Image 1: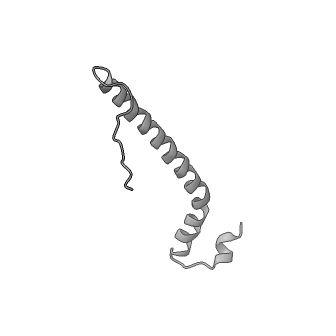
Image 2: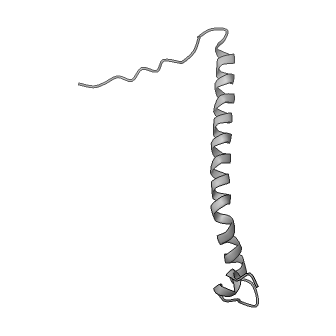
Image 3: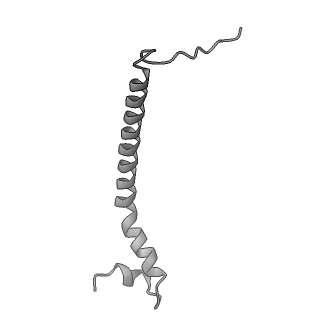
Length: 72
């Protein structure tokens, strides 16, 4: 037995459908940007120090890892 998928549009149809679509697009954009900023914050938080260590290891003169991590 095959199942059928109905393609019903959400919201009101007619004159107001354009406004509902704009709100949906705006809401989707806000949600996506919030999600992206949260992920960027986590990546920056946990990736900054390793990035500095990698950049330091690739510089001239080549320091040892303990020299990069020591405060002196």
